Image (tube, rainbow, N blue to C red; front, side, top):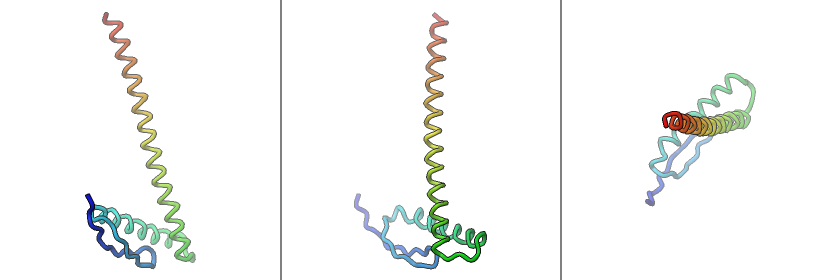
Length: 100
């Protein structure tokens, strides 16, 4: 499945970037760029007087933190699911023994 890459112009901060991506990734890439730019505007409002590199660094830390939190939540849910499965097995075994 070798899709041809398509060109995409992205603006992040004050700069324009021309990238080549798979067509199926276009929507996600555009939404990600919009999120980054929205956060830059938010941080500019909160922390006046910084330069663009500072805002981009703040967004990078925010974005990485969000991603790590999401991964941690998935891992915690997997752990909870595993524990619930163990409890269910214990209950099933107990019920089988009491029914015999």
